[in-house]
Image 1 (cartoon, one colour):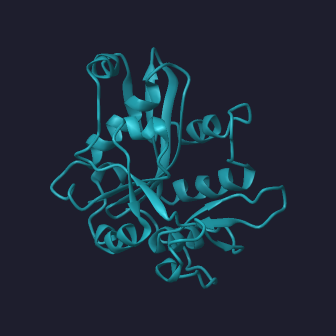
Image 2: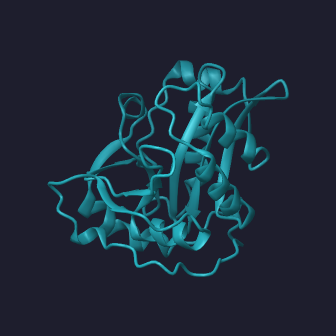
Length: 227
């Protein structure tokens, strides 16, 4: 089971009070300690670095939240064939997955040193996890995120070979499909055209926040340390 860290000393905003017609950004400041991060996810928030080095952390709760329904994943025939060529592992190369997601050569990269350290600490405590795609003994794709009860909050994904990140996502969905699948939340933050092609939909902020407490009450999947 994950280890609960000391609670955050910060008072985080209640995103249910945010104006749904305004920005996705709901707060600035606080820290990236494990207790703060977990409190934020439990409240429907997630962090991103400020615009420049030294800026305070930005906290988002999107007006339109990207969510992948576990029964809505779209897998083409060619992708199913491709998936057979990869080996999937969980939590065997967390640091390498985050490092690949944080590669500064990636367009629109946002993961800085502070974010990497913060999620490494969450991983050490049993809250952050990686799902990895391997081929011929090499890590070629994967994703990482935070698992709290029935919430999996996806943070980032990468691939070095075609379809590798998609294979990791397929594997994640399979890991979350159990008797509680209808109430689990697979949060991907924002919908993109790429994610939409895989079945990611947008839900209003209010709907996401209404579903979140029920998801958090669910047991953690065994692969992520649940009983």
